[in-house]
Image (cartoon, rainbow, N blue to C red; front, top):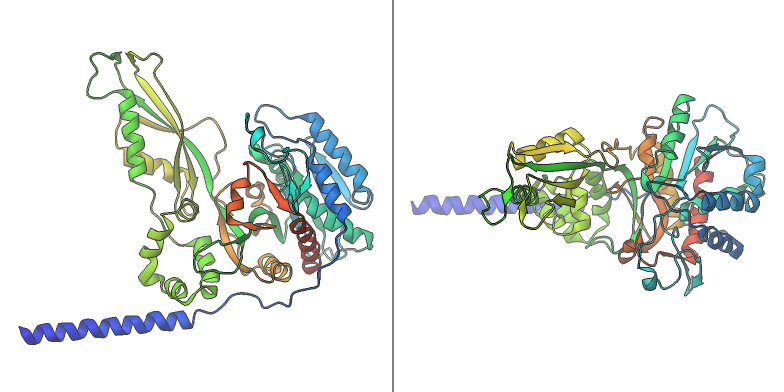
Length: 490
């Protein structure tokens, strides 16, 4: 027996040694996927471009579900036409549903598929009562401390006007692109894009226009993005999560008086259902866009992290556990569950027969609206609780995953490395929604990236207080789009 234990111990040591050798070998052979590019010399961007942007920010083009502030959008339209006359005179312009815009810049070679650069002109409202917490008025466009302040500086007039400025620069030099370039600027992205981007996409589809690639907002260049990675991370979204809100309704045959409550009440049953969902999150996984992201990031990390990400066969559980502990990274690896609205009862001493909740789900690629409903029903497992798709809001399946091998990704990768040479480029998954999801029928490769370089803590400014962007960052965005066009049209 003693000999057997010694033999077993030696086998365990041998197995541990072999496993350790494999872990170290995989880490050492985890090759970089970064394109090696020489940084280019920055073109000079006139300060007048910044002043034009600040003026554009002063128009409160706010999206609301129920109405459109027509005057604000008309004022912005007039501003664009007066400020950038070359766009109207040299490009073909089309207005869609009054306020969205398409520009066509005809290329020299009709055999090349066109590309589409997108952004949206609308912004979210400022929360009522929060004005006192803004350091500068949200529609002032004020420049202070090296920053431009106001709604739209990050989401998404930043993209609209850096694209326009880049095109304007090239038009001034009489540049004609090799391939046709389309620009599309929607006016209602913040409420789903139905009258803007979705209508534009349907027009392209009806006309049989297909794109080599589409670029919309999404990932950005982020400092301190992940532990173990010292360099800024430039994330190109390959896909975005789906969206559905489910109504969870507890239905009982009887209510009654609160002085003699039964063991099961509608409010109690609904609470138990929500608790069950919170205790049974969707499974976490590393695959698709997120799996590819770690393949790009891993080789650029510290040796310990490199060893972790090059050996997912052994470390995936540990990594998923760690990612699940932080809200941002948790959203990358699983379908998320977010109760957002509750309704039940009408008097404090009356037991209602119904109680309901709205629960929002952001769906991981590989899952569907139907599979989410099925999972929720199985977890709740009670025929007194009805699960249905809410009639409010959008319902979208996760978008297809675009290729990292395609021309569009390679051009984006190259351009990012030219303009942000210190950044590590990686594919990623966009956990929110963009107008890009409407264009998967007109291109196999829809990418989501804005050339916005900021700190991780600044991401809270999206849709939040004190939205702002560095002046130099806005100039870099103009440089990025100008260079992107040149690279795509060689």
